[in-house]
Image 1: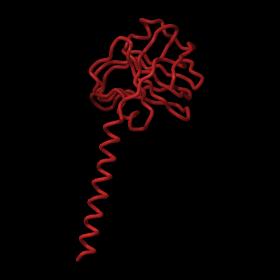
Image 2: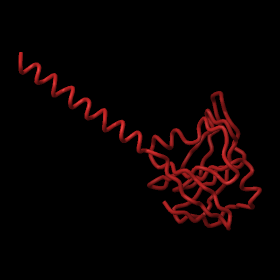
Image 3: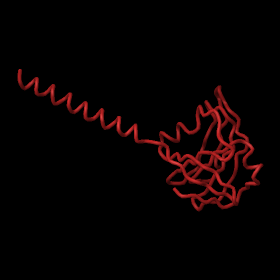
Image 4: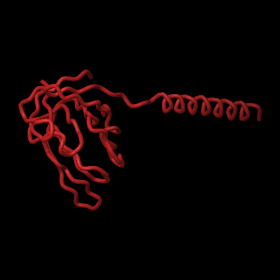
Length: 152
């Protein structure tokens, strides 16, 4: 009987310890940001690095500031696809190479609430995608071939 009680006590202590670690990790996992510069135009971008962050992206976000966005980081570079499922705001998607040059831009990707949603692609291997408000690239004269600067 004592060994069963000891086992149960050990189990619950281990469980509580693990629960505390998860709570601490969740509490301390705040979004990370970086400044992105394209031809003098600066964007304050939330970083999306993990698979879980990539899946969530900007879903359910109701608005971005005029110079805000999200920078998706992919390693290794590959042909990337994004879609606008459950999005609330239209976006420009800037597809960026590993040497930080703009490969292409998907302008004015519209929100999509019903399947099937259009899929936007880099067409060639890319390492980054910068998502900003729709019209941002036109407003700031951002074009393929431009160099992008940021700190990962």
